[in-house]
Image (cartoon, rainbow, N blue to C red; front, side, top):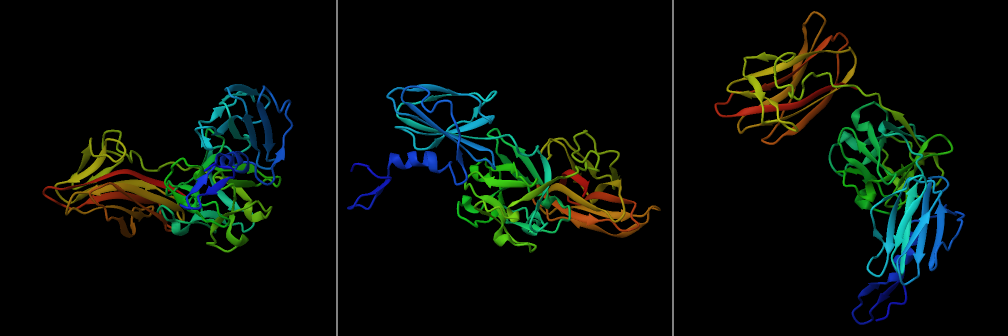
Length: 416
């Protein structure tokens, strides 16, 4: 059956055929969205048989060039004066249907490319007007609440919401520009990237976190608005990050919607002051478990092959014992505590902390984070020091076992 329309349906089998014209339309419609304007070109017919149109989004800085080679041979073309530094080609040809190709670097605004015979190629690029790479809190301009993960979850597909700012790591985001000019947004606590639920292109689809996969669904175009705030467009859906229903209520879901100019689609970026790990030799890669670590019962030692991310770890073997480190802290101050551990069968192991006053007196009982298994897993928590606290003891402890051991690694204590 000859394919004349965009999609044809066989009347007998009901089978659908997606025609080449459909993908050609996509070379325009997928990229040139409402709000784009035509750009002037020095020539729309740079070489015989090649026809070029160009468009820009004046708010976001996105630039789209569509080049048609109507000839029967490949053609080389060059564009100059482009206000972008990279462009991603998407090509439809005799053997390709809107295929994404490797991004091209644009040196000093100059782009050169080869166009196959009878092909349509879209070049999609962005102005370099986004934020510097760094860790930020992201505050909604409508509600004054910050972007967060529901329940401070570290699980994949946990929903992004807005909550009151309490400066915890689940409200902090690592923003990093990619080679194509877009950005990834990764939650500091979970290490998962921000994207749209099920890669949806639907209006009001909610925003979730998931393992970093490099997909367009996890890429965001971030640009400065005329109001000094920032806007976020999802590369896959071409919809804008906002709050569902323009809500100002805590725990309202983050969602995507078309550009509206509403302040619920505007965000303030505040750099997060980075605090270093207060635990010295928390990864044990100095090759020792000695000072500043102190030992109890002398059953803690160094393992040179049992580490989590690197070779070394602290191992407790042979009887009940542990090791700890005294760290000076500020009173009435919040800290994030975390560490990795694993235990052999029938062996207990835990990470713990307890407070001391300036005279060394214990302030309350030791709090343990445990539940480790035979594979490394992380335990983490947040605590606020008492009003009279001067130090905290960060410790690891393991139970006795004739044949088993407990391992601990990558221990950290960071002021919030």
